[in-house]
Amino acid sequence: MLPEEIEARLKFPGKIEEAFINYLKKSDAKINQSKTIATQILYHQKEVLGLNSVDFFSGQKDADGSNINGSFVRPESEHFVIYGIKCYLSPNGGSPVTANRIYDNGILSNPNLVDSVPLNAVFSVTINSVRCLKNVPLTEFDSLSTEETGGFFLMNEPLLWQGQTQLKLNLQAKTGQTFNDESIRFELVGIGLI
Image 1: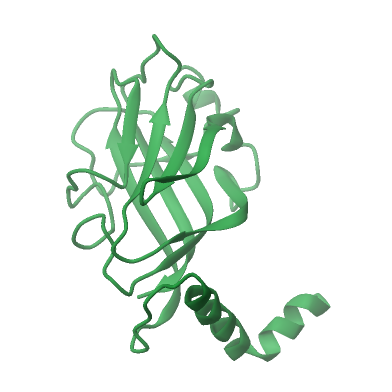
Image 2: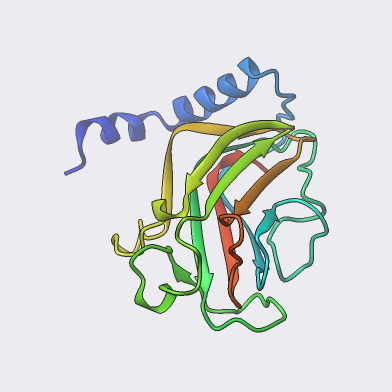
């Protein structure tokens, strides 16, 4: 039997859609009613060998590095509400980044990744030049959690990535430290208009 709160939400699925549209309207986001509301996971992965600072979801995009169509600037009415971020690491390194590369979830406590990433590294998220998350430690991405939640950072307040705006996730190691020969993948998990 489902918990009462979940059961109540499932009885009226249209209410969830209505609440999402109302949220977007209050944010002054332009809405194209022909769009569909769907859960999405948008990812970007990059080689980070020897780098101290790396930007994700911005700059030049290559087809194997992301599942976002077109550029990293979302189309005008394709708004995306992010409620979680996942982080994965590919410990085998090497270039180029390929779509079928194997990634391990999380950073913290994974014995394969102990020396791969400076654990005092942090990440920040900026949307349309407004910093929404600042210096979140990579230790938030614990790999010892259950498989579903491993490497998952669930936010207390969702972030709205409106269409025609830019999002940048910056990964920053401590001054004087660099990332080893591996690829890091960030996933933005949320609900959006597609």
